[in-house]
Length: 187
Picture (cartoon, helix red, strand yellow):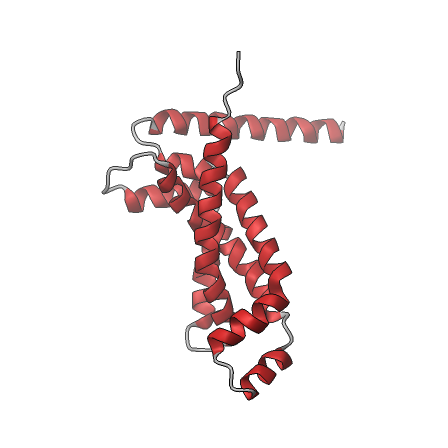
């Protein structure tokens, strides 16, 4: 019996698209939060990082409540769009840390030579922060690839209760496994 590789390719496609979209949104936002101070800066940072604090099941519940008016059809593009919501905070935090670590003396030198902000970003900041930006992208890809639970709950159509039952069973098994592991440690 041949091995079916389609679930792996589907996961790689949706995680890649989610990472690309999260990076496109996170890079300018990280630069803005790292280089500019404006009223509401902390509020924007907190709002962007909010999905990082919520467990995937809670995030899926609120996404279902928000999107409940529309008929959801499972497509890997929909899965990627939902995955962007909980991948964005991780990519944003790591990108921001990398952009803040760049020596501003190089950027100021480029400004004194008459370079525009967009050119400074692409010619000075990104080459100096490429390792952090690559790490942010890889961490975002790993999170999107591994954390498929919230995406399936939101993007599934008529099988919601089956998915909810499977998720509840998995959580119960995880809870029981943790209790058994603690019991062995204490025994």
